[in-house]
Image 1 (tube, rainbow, N blue to C red):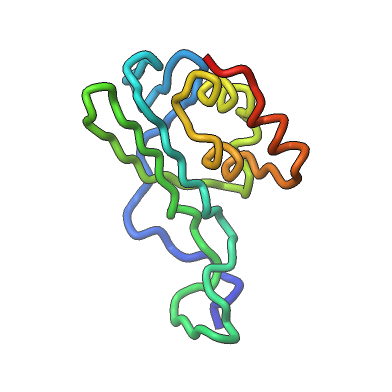
Image 2 (spheres, rainbow, N blue to C red; image 1 turned 180 degrees about the vertical axis):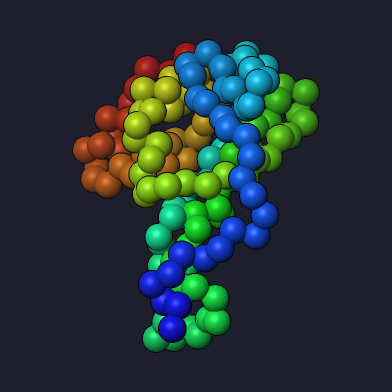
Length: 136
């Protein structure tokens, strides 16, 4: 019974990325916000998330996720794309950089619904306040 064990990583994690208002840094490379057409973040998985419904699904692997089913997709102005898979430690981690995400939204780099998802905005008032930020 591995229901309460975290799934083992298949490979190893390497690298890091940092979100700043004017750039995204991936390892040692900085991508200026002006170079970016669109950012998409899928942060739906985190360490310890129940990965199976052990009543309906039977899985021989461990029952808790290792948090690696997340993606950052950067579409450049020249229409090329960069896709990075990443590990997330906790649900709603992107709330820690809410001001940066707001900046990306205001500058039309990330879509409204993507912001609602990654910032875990949960009520109508929060949705409306975010949606009505002054966009350039």
